[in-house]
Length: 474
Ligand code: UDP
Image (cartoon, rainbow, N blue to C red; front, side, top):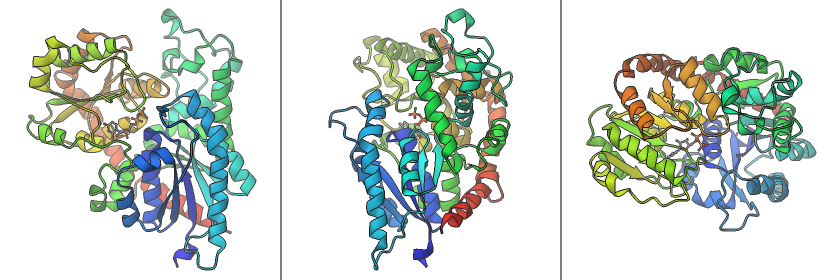
């Protein structure tokens, strides 16, 4: 019986924000009985929390790892070294691994069938060449928010109609960007990523972004971590380019709804860092909805001066705060400024890493100061938690614009904000604006939770995706 199930090979871009949603997808497919091989780099494989527990819960989930070719002390963050490693070192290892898996499957006593398809991260474009060479269908899973992906797919058109590139002087960053169907009235220059702010259209970083995104058109299907009802205007246009689109978001909520209690034992699954559990005890001691949770995700770096501004703003707001301060968040020191020591001890709790889904769901947490990463945004929506958005790179700007202007479930902090802006923003979110934003958030959150429940769009799309994968088998 198990021999007849398809075998999906999943390869995430080797960064935290990409690994977790693809692991959720892997678990969902295994829950439906499919075989999944989830491929990591050696470096991430050894750090992945709960790997053993996951293999026990899902006997058809297999882990494999390959070398990234980077020196041991490389920080392995989003960098040109990592992008080069993907195309040079990781590519041949991935190809070899696929061949080895196929060979193993040919032996008489093999329990796992040969791969039926590859699901790869949208940033792992070399996998398209490998899949095509080996004659395997490839499905593209995209971690960034779909509005960002759609905007990137429209870049050639924006260049053609003269809207790109631009130099990005302060005074003209409010110019509206037209020509991204489905985003009318929403998009402005300041919402576009850094590679659009160049002198000429043939600038290597702009061309790189265009080429990488256009590669996705070779996918036989596109998987998006979003709720169809939230992104319908863009997705209906994307459907003209991609005949098969499966919106499965929020994936972590879809997983929780499908495997229920089982997921609780695996709370920090997909994490590369160890969670501080003591912060939950601290949260238990705080009044209901009083705490502002602060996290800038896994990639954003701050200067020491920015850290200090946030620190002052949070302490002076008078609200309790739980702040994830990753050890690499700044190249400056993490020393607490003497004048903030008392206020931090009284109201603050600073940690290296938390189980974010659990923190967001805690009854003491009333707001989320976030960098507007897509995972964090979806997690906040599921938890029904209003946000303060401080976008910093990539898709953060478009997400923040959508959250604050269209869905009205957050407030946007200016990129160059100082301590007084931060203080008043926290007080506004936790005070006079709370009710208004919470009521918009409740509606959006319900949409998201309904989509993963039986009969909801993400729930149905998962069933259709599984059917599609089963039909790929010869
Ligand atoms: N996260 C976490 N604990 C932390 C900080 C972050 O589990 O202390 C997780 C968070 O739940 C999310 C991911 O890290 O799933 C960050 O992804 P996101 O897309 O928000 O931002 P990125 O780090 O990719 O910029």
